[in-house]
Image (cartoon, rainbow, N blue to C red):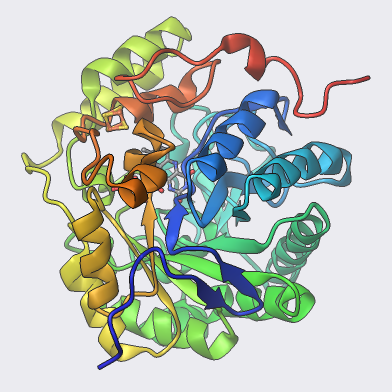
Length: 412
Ligand SMILES: Cc1cc2nc3c(=O)[nH]c(=O)nc-3n(C[C@H](O)[C@H](O)[C@H](O)COP(=O)(O)O)c2cc1C
Ligand code: SF4
């Protein structure tokens, strides 16, 4: 048994030491303009850093233009280094660290048409591509794997050069690397398909390459699913194999999440999607077809009620199976929840909605001003990833739309 650790204690993750163990989860900010970070993104992360988090995460940074899911999404390229540097500097000035969530959508491309077939672990019909005509996907070849590995490495180097303290490789929720791990996508017959060990082979290869490239100075994290939440999807037993392989590949910490964007969003959030808010925002943006599809998907969701710490049991099973640092995520809503995660052997806690609702929550926990989040799990914020002013909590005042129309480093 280790001695009691407080969530306010510092923690070391590979080459990085955080001032405390609260991490803002990567949650698509939609604060970008033609793939470039905006002043709104800078403000968002500066507020979180000033609000006390140990580390904040810039979400959804595509490693290549065809790795985007949405057309406006940031993709990593040298042109945007000054904007990224402005964001990381603002966070550092406020005393926090900052991580870059790097991702490739693979066949999960919902908002734009990709030329030719989208890439994935396997070929065939692509349900996520129906909206924009990406109806078919193709299985990646060895040459594709080499190219995508190189894209992750280049993106990680850019993140390091931009001042990020960590990179988080997205291996959950149905994006490309998850399309290898999950049997929902992976039907391969070669050494990258079949057993859980084979399915994690390519993601682990990407992680090892990133670690070798930037691991001396930058912490290398991976966000994985504890389970996909569907009958035919990955189970916790698969996640244990995944975690062991990523540990062997050199991961500094795993962020434990769950669920898939298409099949089981309710599992990811521990509560149903907010159909009304989604329809309202999408219709405002002229995305009526998307609104209809989302409504249809939401009508198939099970009628679940939200539980705090909804991934705890699965995450504990992974905790028991590996030695590397693990970050607990999923329904952390109070200081007591955070303490429980640490008492259970997790090294950090990762929060999305509680910190979207109140970026100063960590300081309030510390001072005693608050012991619980005011977030009511309505998932209204999820709709705002489609809003031109960026993601926000519906209980808070609207974002300033002007800030999302100017780059993070406006021309002098
Ligand atoms: C508005 C919104 C956007 C999100 N976008 C992302 C994303 O870009 N990448 C990601 O890994 N998870 C994303 N998520 C999921 C969160 O990171 C997190 O896994 C989930 O909300 C559960 O954590 P929580 O209970 O602390 O909110 C998003 C969540 C919200 C609310
Ligand atoms: S909109 Fe606000 S209250 Fe609702 S889930 Fe999101 S952060 Fe919580």
